[in-house]
Image 1 (cartoon, one colour):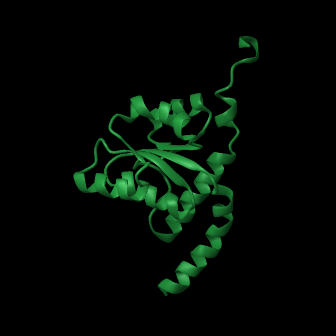
Image 2 (image 1 turned 90 degrees about the horizontal axis):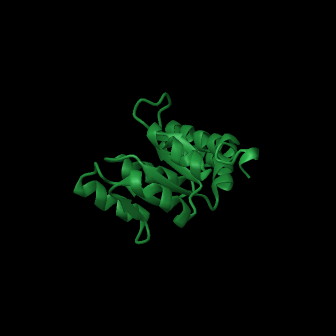
Length: 155
């Protein structure tokens, strides 16, 4: 059953992986989400360049660094660090709580709210498909590039 479901999942994820090729993300989550969402993003073909670890245990920090690799940044103070990292690392996507939406709009990158109160689950096989669909929708949403532009009268 697992083999069959994983093969079915792989088939359904193929178009998303093509769309996500070359994309980079920053996570401002915390706890075990600092590495578990990073792992899910990597399964989708997205490079995670930074994650927040302020609320993470030592074990979570270790796992996060293992998933991100030597060049991955573990943010201690994401509110102060994420804007500069978006530019420095060339991130296309910010996954965080709602307070970080302004940063994404200002930097003109896609945003996904990953608070625990979200309405869709990102757990298990169906959850990975939900995450992929939410990422696709965020990356294709023009509001993230339009909202951060200067008004025509501010040229």
